[in-house]
Length: 265
Image (cartoon, rainbow, N blue to C red; front, side, top):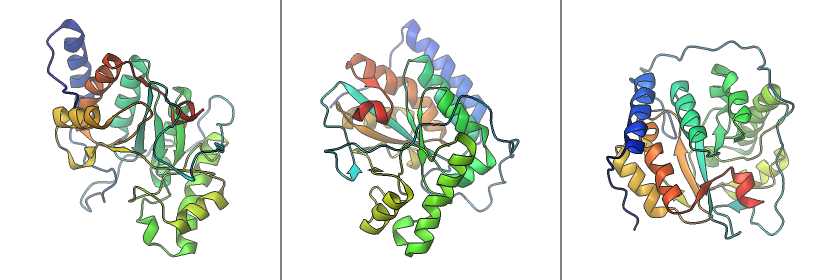
């Protein structure tokens, strides 16, 4: 097991200052990842609804011959990992996490909830312009495996429609909501919607349980190996606070954080 220890050199001091600034930006944000948002939470402020400007159409899904329909990790054997974030919750955490990843030269994968994109449409282009992957995490973040066929398909295509409107493409990946793996029906519906693979993961950070930043960093370090796909979330202060330590640990172990597309190519 890899142990993440507290460091006191200048690098960590700077990381601590960055983390403190990021946490100040998202202080008071309610948890909003893969668990229901509290009914009493005020509605987030809506951003301008015009289509964001930026580079051309986003890359679309692609098939990877020889890989399973539901991908949990890369078999390529390279010293790379994919940090994947469920895109929901307070947008301040999204901006903080993307900025921290980019400072470290890391690229990530964001699986966005369609209703979240409705409220914060500029984040779609922000993700892409940072060099990250952007994908589909359903329209309303319901328990998709429990839905009847028509409702499940509407959840997939509804988010795909938002992504297409905002970026020109349906996103590179689909991940089911409220489930680690898609049911056979949902996997089939995802293929019908244009996604050759379902993106699962082999490392669950459990950051949505708010375990505290040190415990979160230790959990990611203990489970991550070359080729891992790690599940994380926007919307949680612990995740913002833990990301510098997570990235430092990967660097010490010679592992690069890349997009899922890069990981599998």
